[in-house]
Amino acid sequence: MASDREILELLEAIAEHPALEEIAKDAGMSHERARGLVHQLKSVLGRRMKQAILVIDGASKGNPGPSGAGVVLRDADGWEIDAMSIPLGIKTNNEAEYLALVHGLRRARELGIERIRVLSDSELLIKQMTGDYQIKDRKILKLALEVGKLRRAFEEIAFEKASRSVTRRADRLARTASHTSEAQSEDS
Image 1 (cartoon, one colour):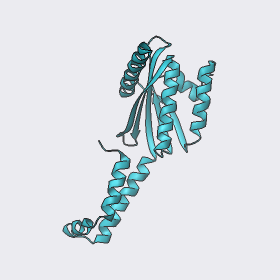
Image 2: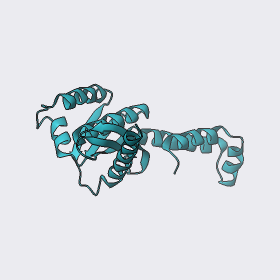
Image 3: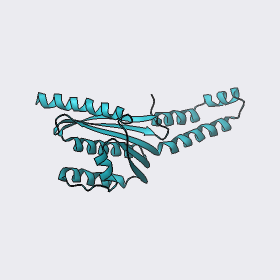
Image 4: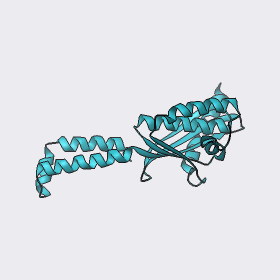
């Protein structure tokens, strides 16, 4: 499936392509009207891209053990924009959850997302991010401070507890990454 960025680039090429005049004529409209419609579609897609849903999960085999992060970014309509499976080395499950959040927020920022809804099946992470639970672990506190810096890049950010059925794809990506971490630690 094409990314939203690729679609925007294609729409830009269509708007400037000489064949648009012939296509417009076949559709019974002026070249300028067709060009305007392509730009309007590009604008709508661009606005839609400014908001996203970030689905995250972390996995650790052993706690601490070989770990991975799974990140899935979806547009406001639920279409997948991007997905990542990130080997993390030896980490605890909570560290893996936070690192999935860090990687996901970084990627969302790279894509120009301004408003984001974070979904995780980790009650601890969600409650810590919403201020309902204190963060006592020093490693987690360090990661939470990094998340705090990343949060400032967004106009709006919300954290929600999600069921495992919602985070299933992120979970698979995290588990795949943890297997990669395990293989890397066995090779060392």
